[in-house]
Image (cartoon, rainbow, N blue to C red; front, side):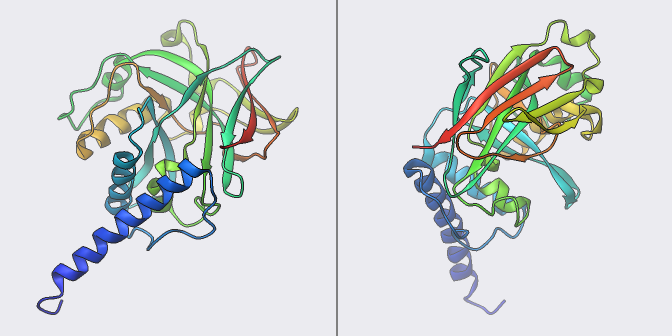
Length: 272
């Protein structure tokens, strides 16, 4: 690096992070699409989370939980990413399902997910947990649907850094029913299906998801300690798409089925 260039380069780097965060937050507030990525794509996960942190500060909304998604293939040895959840909605009966918003002209998808509720807030300075230790800090498991939506239609096409930079591509959570006696259930082997407009779109089991839903909790606890962000009892963890990420359109009807005995529904509407 040429002497004297360090400070301008740092300033340009910081300005880029601030610009991306500001453009995404404004687009979300105004329900407007962003046809192009609003800045220089983050060069690594640290920059991507710096954008996310800046956007969280600008949004000033209450974080009710965190989504955890898979990075495939892993990036720098990291196989998951996280993003804040600002809105969760209790599921309504199938006859009158809750309407969940997505960004018209942007990206929109629905995902069948296991939702974990944090019962004991983790120590914000602790950076390592066993799977059993992370599981012990969960006090409820529910079925649910994550609504993945961004003003930028290419959010999932340009790498994990782009996805992370816009809240991990989250735009809400439908909280379905609780799973009774979940500690005694073999949730990893439950069949899960996602239906759109009455058609089966995806099927799978949590056994195929790295180390499963509770592994997602462990990852979140460790990463947030590294980021210096405290988690709270009562917050949700959306643990990853069991059947995949399925594109939806405004007006679609979505149903997620778990073990052929529990289901959760929603419809899709335009944001704004």
